[in-house]
Structures are given as C-alpha cells and as structure tokens.
Image (cartoon, rainbow, N blue to C red; front, side, top):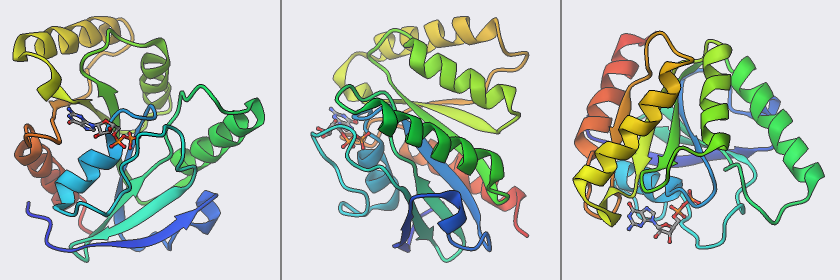
Length: 200
Ligand code: GDP
C-alpha cells in the first residue's frame, strides 16, 4: 500500500466525539516519546501530519486522520509519562478504555514499544489487557536505527518470551525506524491486508 492522501480529520476528547464510524480505522498507541508521531509521519510521507516533539505527554486527545479516502489512522495519546497529575492519568485511562471497547469500526491497534528497552511492565500490562478484551493488536518495535539488528532481535525475543506465558498465539510484531525507513514497506503491506480484508 502506498499512502497517497492523508488529512487531519478531528481531535476528540471522548469516543463519543469521534467521527462517524463510516470508515474502518487503525489506531497507534504507546508510551510517550516512543516515536509514534515520527512513525505516523513516515508511513504517510507527511512530515507534519502528527507533531513530533521532545516533550512527552503533550497530545491528550484522540486524533483522526483520513487515509487514501478509505480508512482512518488514529493517533491515541501516549501513556506512562511521569510529570502528569493522577487525575489526568485517570481521565486518560477512561478515555482510552471507552474508545477501545466501544469503537465499532476499529480493526487493529498497533502498540509501539521502544526496541532498545527490556520489556517494560507498563507495556506488557497494556498488551495483555488488550488481549484479555479480545482486541486485535500488533506490536511495533521502534527506533531500530539506534542499535544493531542483533540487539533488536534479542529485544523482540525477550518480549515474546514474556508474552508467551499469557498468549496462545502471539500477536504479529514489526521492527521499524523512522530515520532510515526500516520496516515501512512491511508495515504498510500488513495494514493493506487488514484494510482489504475488512472492506465494507
Ligand atoms: P511520540 O511522543 O511517541 O510521538 O514520539 P516522537 O515521534 O515525537 O519522537 C520522540 C523522539 O524520538 C524525537 O526526538 C524523535 O526525533 C525521536 N525518534 C522518533 N522515532 C525515531 C527513530 O526511528 N529513530 C531515532 N533515532 N529517533 C527517533
């Protein structure tokens, strides 16, 4: 799949405000600073679509982008930032929980994790929580240009080992770099197959 059209549609503070579910959608989520905005910009060939920032935890809204006039790409607010009040964290939890469980046109959730880190409890918990709720997901290991291929592979293997104790069948995994475009083609092909399988 080539993304030829990408356009900001709407920011919402609740799933109730999201655009009508008239297109299927694919969501991206991960810890703040994991490289989500950079990945979205890489996939869409649009350097400015999602904002890239050095300041974690800024975007606290559900952002919809229309892609190829066919599906919505959804940029969900990051989790796990340090300098945010407890009440904001609770609001985040409720908003994401409601969105994930109620959005009828949601095809897939990409959970982004930093390929350089050992499995982080917050990421493992989030992934398992999606699984427990029967939500379809895939994992993207980001920023692979920051280390050797071997280290990325060993990082992915560590995650798989932990997840195996919870999952019968592991979710698909991808390794990407928004700096050297590693994994871009593979990820777009996967998205293409998911979107095509679900054309209404
Ligand atoms: P977000 O908070 O998850 O949206 O993360 P951003 O996309 O804003 O990226 C956070 C920081 O990581 C920025 O300084 C980016 O330039 C950097 N970054 C993001 N993706 C990559 C990548 O693939 N490789 C490298 N080396 N840096 C990245």
